[in-house]
Image (tube, rainbow, N blue to C red; front, side, top):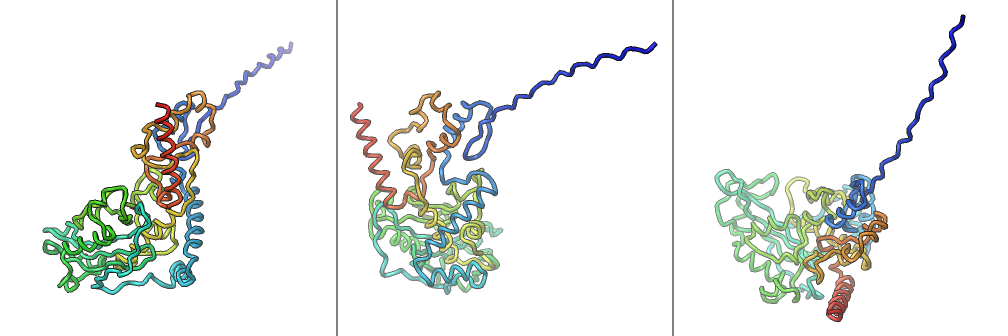
Length: 363
């Protein structure tokens, strides 16, 4: 007698419902709920100019900046030739001779609101028992056209215990008869103030220059000088030039990545570093800045209204927006350098005045 075969068992299949993830259009963080993404956008202050993700986005930015950089320097055929030579590794940027102490006689007056920029770089030697104390021993200032305004060796206020020759190229004989620090401070202030009083530096008006550099706070500390924050442009702290986790890049890396040539090969030259930070600043300043939706990319405390853009929308309106639309209405918590251009600044001022008048009328 044959045994009856067991009837085939019915296999129950369950369809896995994919989890919906709401991805930030700027940093690509993912959230299970749309409201969590909205809270992230409110607190992150993403900017249209900041780096977005990792290598892929950075490569895209590099190509864009390189194209802008080549186009920018195209105003001078000699400059283009030099840039191509430097990029191909055939020529280094010119090194200035030591002991140059020179103020340009034809410093042009600024066009207002601190649009004209001056780049600064210092070289440090070591002081103290173990040579770890940084002492300014050489300083250089250049204008927007890469012309030297001031360059000299600086006499340290305490004895030097480590000249750091391999990095600085500075020897003991270079500092014999060097300019005292107080005179250096006076010369620098004369250039930055553009003939006006020192008090004008801390005002929004006047003809004071924008000061550009890399890790400016350290350079100013070594010079025993202060300069208003609203006139500082630091390539080590500008978000679009930093890593996505807001860690600074070295100037050598930024120059190679965004300008396409190497610096700081052997002993460092402050003129070479000044030229690099000035070129980086001018490329960033030339970026197109959106004047609609995203606001002015000014710090929140600089705006008349301290609330964020998102506060003007209802929650259900924000939830209906795509991540890209949420990103477009975001506002950064730092000032974009592209706002240093006169056109952008005038537009922001006009918009700001209209907003203030509208608020006053409502009240």
